[in-house]
Length: 431
Ligand SMILES: [Zn+2]
Image (tube, rainbow, N blue to C red):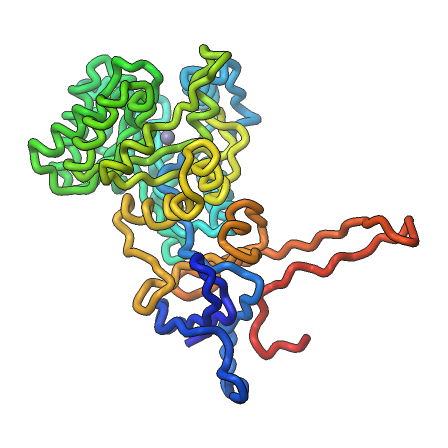
């Protein structure tokens, strides 16, 4: 049993949170009643969170850990999707299993330090990569089990009707958790969607497709996917990632397709950084943002989660792996209310990945992140690195930051140390 004391919730309440057996046992107003004596027992896991905001830990619904941290090795000379794909193909021979594992684990540590305790990553399967990226990520998934929930999506290249369709089935036998593909790149996009759905149905696993990652309004496989899922009463979770072309449809089509998607129970994942980077380069004036039609989808009742997608690879060379950057872009480019933006990197992706819900409430899994900030808006806006992260009630990452700033003073050369930001410390520790 441990206590997280004096934490600020997203609603602004100041609370003490008791954690027992990996779950939140109780949440009570912070501090002892006036005149009460201090708690007689202090557990080593107790933390003073005064000056911190406590949120459910972040969930990354769409990553590419096998490609992470390759931007310097594989520059994207055109800056668009095709340029990124070609840049990765150019270094395929150098992507050994050991290299993939090393970069994937570095990427996991970056995410974990920033408060992400679950990641769904797409993994290239077939073609020049064969099964080695999947083998690497299966090993990584098992090694990090208990610290990070890792889900592996087998991502095959077109055409699904050929060898890649067989590779997809093989990948599920090799340990992939989810069916993936990019039907908009397939010579027969609708057929590709159908093959993916059949494959997922046979294996009894979810499906998560790169969907309509193009500004071409004539490519709208999202509608096909929704129709097929509804017609076949597909029983497993389905996610549509990107859905860029929905954004360039007329309002009536956006609303109609959004209603189809809602009826089919498909979750949409929007990926602001990568879409802002890759899309719209042939529109140098009023450049389209490349984000999906977030408003109509949400209005229809669709769960819209947001993810970071690429961590410094040719698809987005300046990715940070920080869910708070994603959430901030959901405010700036996605026009969400800040509270909804935080939900888009916490609650919504949890639903997309089929993970138990996390609330600052009794009974909830204690997968949490505390961010040094006065309130939730400051946490989102400032996105400071000083964070503490819990997985199943255990601290799995803790980052402290110390700044020194020279201020105008009577002694101009003096370097004054600012008061360090408060660090969560074991209660009862010596000052
Ligand atoms: Zn992707």
